[in-house]
Image 1 (spheres, rainbow, N blue to C red):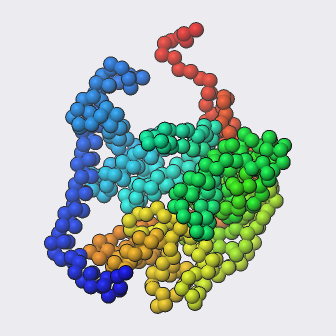
Image 2 (image 1 turned 90 degrees about the vertical axis):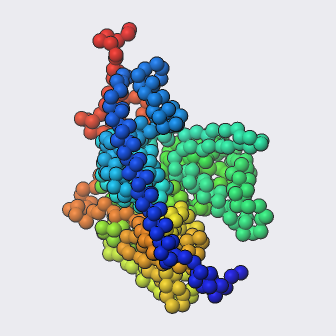
Image 3 (image 1 turned 60 degrees about the vertical axis):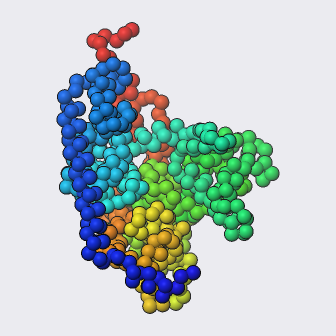
Length: 541
């Protein structure tokens, strides 16, 4: 193993500050910016071509001028017809509703890959919503890796148009499924699609058991253990009565897509039957009868108190997944344990975490009373944010605080390692720097090692700025988001919607309506779902 002296000797031979090395780095940066500008110019040309081609409804297939045009583009770009269609749609979006992103491309301020990712993510939204997302996020996503662009766009869409988000969530909840895809060499791939919370909790359950077995000395890899545990059969008839199994068979057999998660810690109960048979109190999770799949596993959801009280539709954050809609967040509070988390207004920076959980009665009114107590009662600081500990390794409360604050590794390479899987790195090395929240960051092992190779981090209130050995500067924004804020709302309890009605409305929003208008929309915005548009003056019957 190399010693510190060996590393220093190797660093002394590195060319980071040599003039020719710096010149080549600058050439790479200029080439990247030039590629973005060339791409923007191509999109302008393609948009001008699109504007000249006549189009008619339903002309995506068959012998029409539009299909001929797509083939012309495919030949000119030496790509397939499908890729040409994607290029055309990208050009239309960039020159239409994504004008800020287009301006950044033309100035070389965003890479082609990041611009394409933004275009792909807003493809499912109409031009108006896509334009709003572009106006808010274009400059921010210019410095983010692809996976963070996905999260930022999804959060913005949930916040800017919660009614449309509810329609999409309801439709996707109804469309949950498991599909089998055969692969070569006697292998197969199973795709599980369904609500994020149950799928995430199921995966965390399997992962936690796999890691426990690995720690106990199991020779299998973590990936092998996850597979073997996920494919074991259930429900467990030995630990549940026969009538419970019969009542919950349909729910239990889809446990991978119909489980639940809680705000900080789940209550460990193998079966709960509230309302409909086989459902937990939130009517989102199927009550599993499998003792192996109902082990207590932490699934943390951070929900703004404004959202929880029905004053805002700001999305919540589900660890291991990302942003989830406000109705889903509120539904999951019904059988959750709550913990107060204090953040700084304007930046969303974590300030304090309560040192205990609150277990309200599992019904909307009980959750409402607990939330109001959190908001209106004086805040007793747990002092975890200001605590200084003598030892190198932080205590469990301090580790939990840092993981909740950071969410992910803050490395310059854009790694997606979740904070609870990271090492806790001292910005100022211990013992010269204390074991305290301000001096600790959750960092993946490879990010931690970068510091030993000359990469230097600098913390600000909203980002980590990295300085490379060659003098490059990379700013990595933190994952915190400012809360909506309720301090300006006068007479807070008097302005709150009824807890039971809000809960029922959220339930209705998350159910796919087969026909009829959506009752949660204002009357002026409701659409007649039976309305048809005919190509001829008279209907064909």
